[in-house]
Image (tube, rainbow, N blue to C red):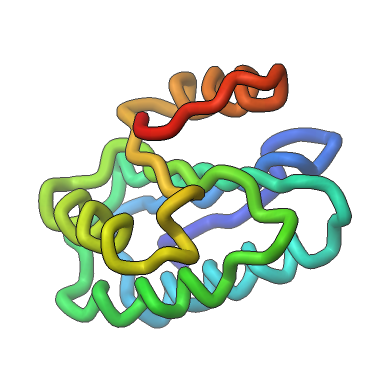
Length: 132
């Protein structure tokens, strides 16, 4: 599988999704289900970081996954960071942020894992990022 999903920290507050090379819409949907199950297993807020730095070209049917992603949002879903998406994925994410209200307040596009982690740390300290 070209998308790995795992807990980034021992407290299980941050889920990491790492895209490596070519990936399919089926792999993406399976990874979203895995993330949903991981978030559902916790009562505290869980943030997600999807690192697309080494991702291959996105599948043409990617827009189909956006509705599935919105359905994955749970009450304890924190911020959802997409790291370094290509232009195609970035364009879809900008449309998704405007059209799917369930994802609007969660989704952030960032340039590095470090930036995502800093924003999570700041949010847990009380700083709110509205549009990063």
